[in-house]
Image (cartoon, rainbow, N blue to C red; front, side):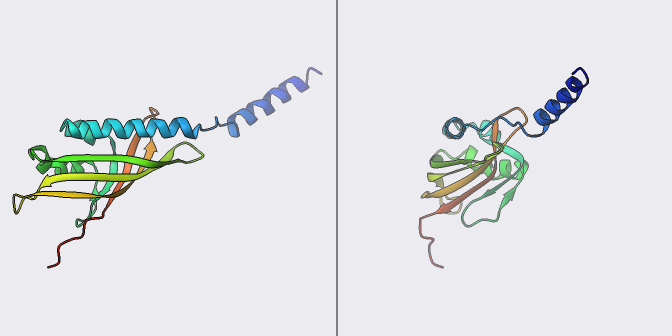
Length: 160
């Protein structure tokens, strides 16, 4: 009987190390992601672009209508630069769908957004609205950060 104890302990250790991942509570994670988005929206409302930028991974990609993809935090920060001094800049967004992977390390949110900002060429305030999808990756500290942020405008573009 004594010789079976070390073998049993070894088998138990292997099982614990290989196959026993805690289950993901999708509802809890969805609420967590919606809270992340709510804070992100508040950071934009306060025009705290440093905090807004902190919601992105270092290698994040931001895609907005009519512009090439913006890749990486430094490029996203540069894209935010004109908005910092725009008194008319506003953005709202809210997800109506949140999906979390079974592994709990990837997720996406899908929803609607509205924006207002000053057109740098005309000086006129431009209003936009549409849909978005944001892909999130769980970080080593357990937080969620956006790795892809894609918006699709529903406003018709002016014809040339």
